Amino acid sequence: MIDNIIRLSVERRFLFLVLALILIGIGVWSYQRLPIDAVPDITNVQVQINTKAPGYSPLEAEQRITFPVETALYGLPNLSYTRSISRYGLSQITVIFEEGTDIFFARNLIDERLANLKSVLPDGLEPEMGPIATGLGEIFVYTLEGKDGATLPDGSPVTPMALREVQDWIIRPQLAQVPGVVEVNTIGGYDKQYHVNPDPVKMLEMGVSLKDISEALYLNNDNAGAGYIEKNGEQLLVRSPGQLTGIKDIENVVVGKKGSVPVLIKDIGTVGLGKQLRTGAATRNGKETVMGTVMMLLGENSREVAALTASKLTEIQRSLPSWVVTDPAYDRTTLVDKAINTVQKNLLEGALLVIVILFLLLGNIRAALITAAIIPIAMMMTITGMVQRGVSANLMSLGALDFGLIVDGAGIIVEKAQLIWSRDHNRCLSAYFYFNRRRGKDVSSHGNNCCYRSYCGNDFVTDGSACSDRNFHGGKNQ
Image (tube, rainbow, N blue to C red; front, side):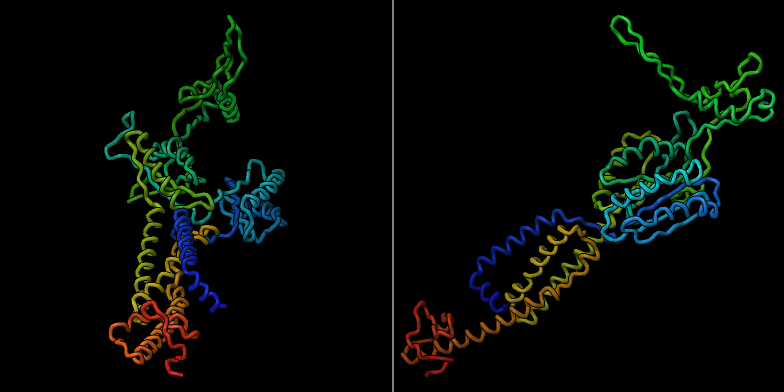
């Protein structure tokens, strides 16, 4: 079979040359669409279920949340196994599915099971599925810091709470719109809150309880509509705005009455800005800051998504207040570019080394270049297959290429062809000298013009004319 392939390649060399050019063209087209990454994402198909349980100890979280949820997931199609962690105030369950399971199908199955658990779990607890991401989904990290010497519009210094407010209300919503971004997490700073600090003594004097305060704040923080009034062909909307907009509005909320006098929030306590309790912080260069982490959607190209995120963050910076500045701390694009540059350098050096070794072994630069031509063609075919299968170009997929194995077969064939050509060429020269000397012709200037066409048919061509003596075989006169 190999002999037939080689014979067909020689006889139809222009056809095979066109096929090789077509393969190269398809490879170049595929290269432009090849996803590039630093390392492959080998994470299995998994879904995380997180349940916040404030005040629950690890044992209570395990008994009342983790165990019921994990038990309810048994029997799901394509389920491989589950693992769980119960900590103070948190229950986390990781559900692992068999390879090849569609992630959206798996999440839909879990969502159906979680909908039936509301009557089993304690009131106020709601299990939530994590983002559609993997452990390699953290592609971009940035920090928010106040400029040196800058102050807030009211003259106060820049605080972590102010930075967190910019992150939550300006930066995060815009970064979430970047294609390929599934979630933006925030670490550090303080969540801005309005705190009502009641005085127990004044509450007793006014006959107000904590329940009265809570209900009054809830009922007095809403807008109400009352339809519309038609007048002169126009509709005049009737509404009662009641949302609280600041500290003064909260202080004037009525929580009860003493006799005929209404009791306000400011009569039984104070109102001021506060912050939510936190269990961690973010620092950079020893200074507290606010840090944002961009998570990539499963299956996306990390290099492209990170580049789009960096471009979007630069665009957002122009619309931020003058006292805040964003600074990227980690960009996956830098890692990917360095990794690819390393791979390109190694591949280029490997190809040149193979060509040099082939030249030393074959002793012919033309044969070495013909053999080395297999390398780019094989690379183009490999890239085409990677694009079709969705495999990214990374350290593992490209670093595993062995040029020695790629050119091994071609080197053997070229070396054999070179040996046969050399042997037949020498026989052709011997026949040329033999016949022409018998004719008394001068052969000193025509030895290199002899070309062997068909040794088996005893057909030798010299200077365009066939040898006249047909009785020569194997370089001897028969």
